[in-house]
Amino acid sequence: MTEPLSGSALLLTSAGAKIPMLQAARQAWLRLFPTGSIIAGDMQPLSVSRAFADSFWQMPATIHANKTELRRGCIERNIKVILPSRDAELLFWAQNRDYFADAGIHIIVSPEAGINLCLDKLAFAEFGRQHQLAIIPASLQIDDINAEQFVVKERFGAGAKSIGLALTKTQAKQHARQLQAPIYQPMQSGKEISIDAWLDRDSCVKGLILRQRDKVVAGESQISTTFSDAALAQQFSHILAQLNLTGPVVMQAIIDASGKPHVIECNSRFGGASTLSIVAGLDSLYWSFLQAIEPEAKLSDFTAATQQIRQLRYSMDTYQYDPDF
Image (cartoon, rainbow, N blue to C red; front, side):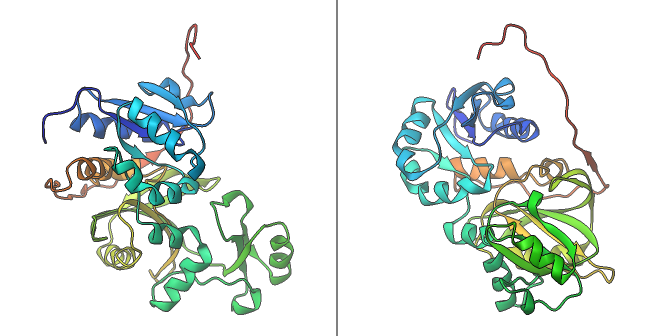
C-alpha cells in the first residue's frame, strides 16, 4: 500500500441497523487506512448504525436529481470508497460510477448490465434457460410452469414477506392478485443454501464460500453453517462467471435430494449474513477496498477455513446516556 491518507473515510449506505456489516467493513478499512473512519449513511435520522460508526450522514435519496448533492457531500466528508448495501440503490451507483470516480470516490458496485439481470427475477430465469444454467425457471403465466406446487413472488425487489410457497395452482393465482408484478415458479424442495463469492474486474471468481441456511427469518439467515463441496463450488463458479458481476455477491440456491443445485436468485452486493464468509476465509471487503484504491495491487490468496463454522445472528441492546442526535 501507498502511504495512508489521514482521515480517509468509507461510507456504508443504507446502513440502517446493519451493525455486523458495519463492523466488518471497519475492520477491512482500517487495515488499509489505520487513521481512517467509517461513516454510516441512511435517509432515516434515527438509524441504529449511527451509534456504531465514527460519524453519521443523513443522506438524500439515491436518485439522479441528487447526484451533485451526494458527490459534494462525499467530498466534504473525505469519502474515498462507497459500499452500497441495498438492492434498490445499486443501479444508481453503477450508472454514476464514473461521475463519482472523477472526484476520487470509488464505488463497490457491479456493472449495470449484471445488476439489471439480478434485479429482474424473470430475466434472471430466462438467462439461465438460454445458457443452460441450473437456475429455477420462471414465467408470467402459470400455465408455462409444469409443477404440482408453485412459488409466487414479485418480479422485482426482495419480496420475502410477500412470497407464496408450496401453493396449488388455484392458490397461486389467488396469491398473485396481491402482488404488483407476480411471476410463477415451480416449488423446489431441498436444502437451502447461500453462496458468497468475490469476483475480480474480469468477472472471474476469486473465491466462494458455501453456507447452509439452517434457520431463515423474513428472508434473512439467522443461523448459517459453512460446508465444503468441490463439485457444487465449481458449478456455482461457472454460473457466476457468466453474470457480468464484480466484487462481493451472494447467490441463493436449493440442493435437492440427489445433490443437484437449483439457483433461486443472485444479489449483486455484500449480503447481510456474508460476514460469516469473511470469517471462513473470503476476504471480500478488504479485496474490494484494496482493488478500488489501488487497482494494480496484488490481492492475497483465497484460503477457505478447513473446519465448519456456524453463525448465529441475534439482536442485542446498547445504551447511550445524554444521546446527541
